[in-house]
Length: 139
Image (cartoon, rainbow, N blue to C red; front, side):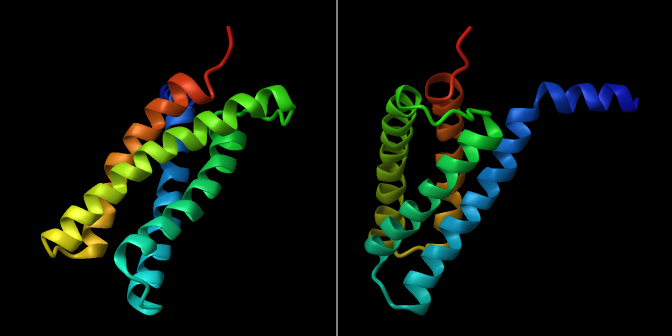
């Protein structure tokens, strides 16, 4: 039984680590948004942008080093990883911004609740992009 569990952990290691670090990135994003919006009185859209920037920088390093184990900082590696990572995150960041604008500013929903919902959608899309394009292992 222990060997079977160990095998599953090894088989799904990158997904498990992605969920773990994704949860931490979500925490960075949500806490940053909450602090900006509720504590410092920054309006919704700038709060979303600040939270996104902090979460993306955190996610780049955790994804690169621990999730997808891309340890190289060689210029040719970074020339691929940085623009594709930040480009994909920009697209999902715009999706996040659109969801938050519609849900909070237009429909007057709870900003923190909608931030969590939006983050779930964004995390799934970011995993797919990271696994299949950004940190794809070369055969």
